[in-house]
Amino acid sequence: MNKILDIEHITVGYDENPLVLKDVNLSVFENDFLGIIGPNGGGKTTLLKTILGLIKPIRGSIRFYEGDKAVSRFNIGYLPQINKIDKNFPISVFDVILSGMALTNRFKVSYSAAQKERAKEVAGQMGLTKQLKKSIGELSGGQIQRALLGRAIVDSPKLLVLDEPNSYVDKQFESDFYKLLESINENTAIILVSHDVGTVLSMVKNIACVNEGLHYHAGADITTEWLEKSYSCPIEILGHGNLPHRVLDKHEGCDCCN
Image 1 (tube, one colour):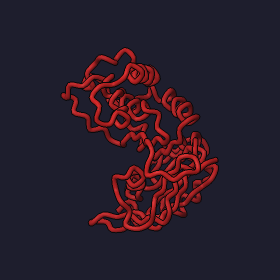
Image 2: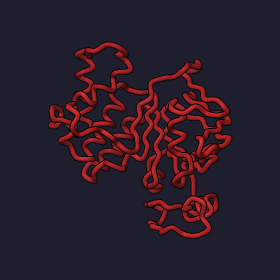
Image 3: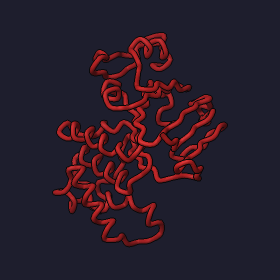
């Protein structure tokens, strides 16, 4: 299996928090499905933003590969945790999805017939065919998230990055959403951040636990006991399958709750 992304000894921080990530190493492979978990403030979203090139590491390196050749960067689809679409902005669902082709088009204003057909196809995958002509402001939160997911995958990215993707996906679409990710993963590597550990464990191929440092678990082999020991408290998660459901209040003696 070819490596598509290699992170070596990166340290990332901000002025107010100089060490969000410290000496992190991670490799991502073709058709990988990597789940990233960890406590709030542990650095999950910072790791994603570093991969996307939105944040530069203080130290270390990130390398991208096409086959066995190193490249400066490749096409990455991104679905952020929180959508901030202006519901009064006059743009249709079709145009939102089609805008995912902008990187390929670069400075061209028009889109080809094939690109428009692809946008319609993706809208169908998202269950939004009937909403194509509607303004984005007419959609529910879950529908908006589907439209943004459509935008992220319409240009067939080599890597799809999802930050808490189920935050806005409505229950009616949730099972179809995870089936869709399985289908996308046949041709695209996926990195998924989620607090729902049970769902992550049932879907992904590998797990990375992030809390300033990073612990990699090949085969998504992880236990509740390891989580509690590593994070010095019962991590605040919603679990399914072999992990118990758990809802916690803030408690003393816990760095991630302070």
